[in-house]
Structures are given as C-alpha cells and as structure tokens.
Image (cartoon, rainbow, N blue to C red; front, side, top):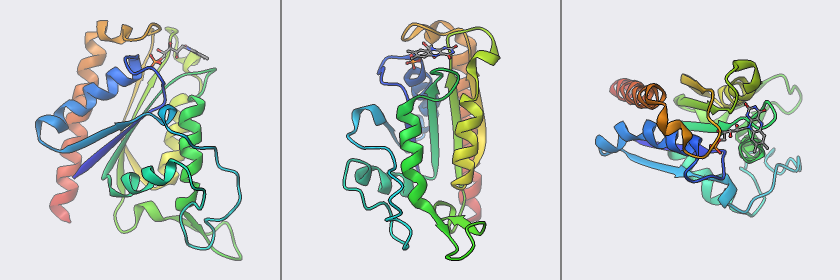
Length: 201
Ligand SMILES: Cc1cc2nc3c(=O)[nH]c(=O)nc-3n(C[C@H](O)[C@H](O)[C@H](O)COP(=O)(O)O)c2cc1C
C-alpha cells in the first residue's frame, strides 16, 4: 500500500504542506509508505499538446515528470493539496494535472469514447485539501471543484475534500486545532477505505 501526496504550494512550511503532513500521520503510524512531492521543486513543463502519448505510450517529454509517473501508477491513493491563487489551484498543481493527460486513452475515431489507464484494473482513491486566506468560501473559487473534476476524470474516487479558510501566513493553519484534527481524521478515513478495498483484492 502506498500513498502519494502532491503539494501545489512552494512553501515547505506553508499551510497546505502542514495539512498534508497531518493527513499522512495515520499512514506513517501504520507503517504505510508515504511520499510528499512538490511540483515546484521539479523541472518540468506544462503539457504541450503534442499528442505523443496518443499511441498507447505515456508522455514522451523527457523531464522530471518521468520520475513521477511510476509513483502515480504505484500509489493506491493520492492526496492533492493546493492553496487558492486567484480563485483557483496554483499553476504548479495545474501543470502537474495537465501532464497526467497521458493517462487517458481515446478511441481512434470517436473521442467521446475514452478511459483513464490509471483506474485499470482498480480505481484509486483521492483526498483533496484546499486552503485560502479569506474567511468566505466564495474566495476559494473553483480550487476544490477544479481539482476534483480533473482527478475524478483520471479515475480517482474522492474520499474527502477539506476546505480550509482564513489561513494566510505560512504555517498559520497550525493554530487551527479543528482543521488539524479534521486533516488527521481524513487520513484515518482514507486509510480505512484503502484497507477495505485491499480486503476485496
Ligand atoms: C498569488 C496569490 C494569489 C492568491 N489568491 C487568493 C485568492 O484568490 N483567495 C484567497 O482567499 N487567498 C488567496 N491567496 C492566499 C493564499 O491562498 C494563502 O496565503 C494560503 O494559505 C497559502 O498557502 P500555503 O501556505 O500552503 O502556500 C493568494 C496568495 C497568492 C500568493
């Protein structure tokens, strides 16, 4: 069992990273392999739409995403966290998602027929964390829904979507005990979900 976390913020001690780490705690306690990656640390470009992946291969662009694809494939669950930047996810998270386009497979003559190779043979599970500065959910914009639609299209089933308001400075969320507890509880629920799914495998 393996869980991959993706942090859309560049701030290692920021709010998103703090919440992701809290969510991973139950997995670490259960000796389950976890990894957190920061797309902002990696050298990769956004999807160029070259369609090099259309003939059944994965992405042909030789950059740091090539190290990440095997991690995405291996992980049973993905936890994606992003701060809100201008009512949406950050460009680091968007770039990461766009490069997952290569997991889709389309019918050669009818593009309305398609699958994601990521949920073959079994679906993967998803946790989402969105963080913003303002204390009004409208100021989070489409951050949670845009991430959810994208990852669900890739074959993930959403287990939780935590929305954290009123957190501006890096690490400020550590003062919000209720949100830290919610992040931990979400981790526990995702862990139980994974164990249940494995028990049928
Ligand atoms: C470029 C930029 C755009 C932002 N846009 C919004 C926004 O639209 N709504 C909001 O509430 N907060 C916005 N924020 C605040 C961040 O979402 C907030 O500081 C968040 O806690 C940062 O998360 P981090 O600590 O994980 O980096 C913005 C911050 C930056 C730097």
